[in-house]
Image 1 (cartoon, rainbow, N blue to C red):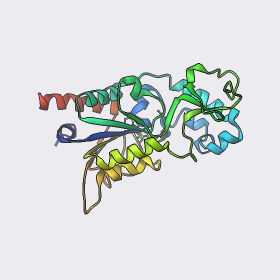
Image 2: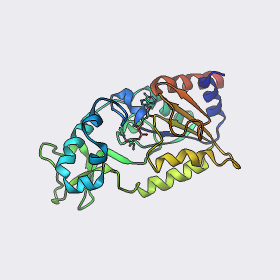
Image 3: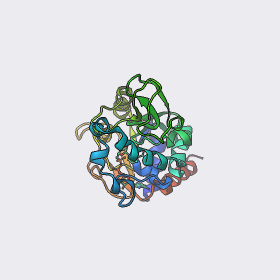
Image 4: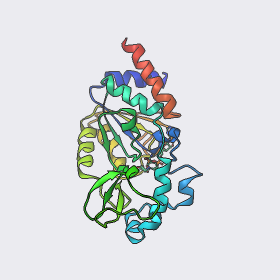
Length: 250
Ligand code: NAD
């Protein structure tokens, strides 16, 4: 059976659908994922620059990379983000749990977005905790500083930091409760977000939800947790699924 059709049928029958997204949903907006061969991550070692200890040790050095990363995030949502907005409006998707820190789901118009790794379009003061938009700070002199004299940090997490508590609890509750999860553009390799599809799926003795992957390539959960994978670009596949749902429900 055509997998777009199958996904449309599964989504339209679900009582509680949710989406888990990763960097791959934003590559068509021009923001590279970790796997891209060229670009940011070939020049900066993610293990070095992405760890909170590196930030603490040399915030100015890490901010050089962050400044470039944040400028890349000056991007527009793509058809995949907009398709998820439509699915939410149609009542098929209750929430988008995103590992992305680029704010593109929110900019596209999704209402219930859970920022699992925070949001790099905001900064937070490491001393007083005040938050503001990244567009409000001076990035000429690094590291950027708060009025209180503290160093500003993106309001998202680095490796070595805990998942924001509320986002974690909400995500676990949603993944446990849902009966369908779309896993879009994530390699499903970054813990603990990688565990959410397992919660959605249930266990061998107590199967629960349908897990559908949309990805350019197979991942660690393909065929183990996901029921099936639709291989290709999220920005092409998701709008087709929306169109198919409209045709079967009209
Ligand atoms: P990842 O880089 O490990 O994996 C990206 C996945 O997306 C891969 O499986 C790849 O095959 C797939 N992919 C790439 N382009 C695609 C497309 N057009 N359509 C469908 N699939 C596509 O990313 P991850 O799993 O999200 O984990 C990496 C971590 O990096 C996350 O924590 C995320 O927060 C962070 N990150 C975020 C951004 C962002 O905010 N846009 C960008 C880079 C990294």
